[in-house]
Length: 153
Image 1 (cartoon, rainbow, N blue to C red):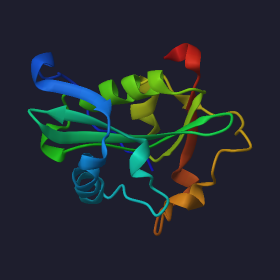
Image 2: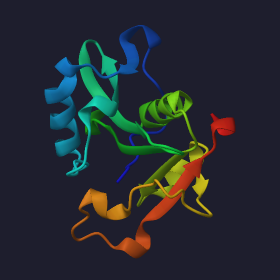
Image 3: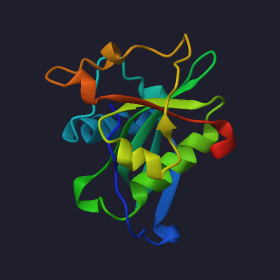
Image 4: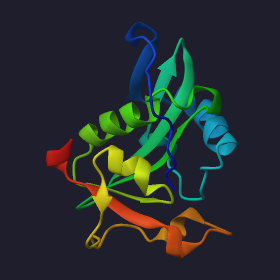
């Protein structure tokens, strides 16, 4: 599931870098998503984008381009840096890199609405089911499928 990273003020651009993750980032990404309880069995580390601040991974998001849509998941910012706009900036940047309309499943639709997402009226056939997240203890009635078209990026 995607969870908000942050909102509010941002850090200085000189100390920040949003980029496609490299193999060397795997351990830091895993540590971050586990600390934020965002890890799931079908996670693909090769599909991550990271926010690097002063040489350290402080935020991450997974973007998978499928056949007809892109899937955004594992959006998270280190807890002590939340509330500074980093989550929204990361979502905006990653969504611009998607090849197709971007879909996600979330328990926090308000955050993603602020980033240009809306409730999905239908789902493309290649969008994986919610069950890929292994959401034990999660209330499926609270989970929303949302989308953002390429034109909104």
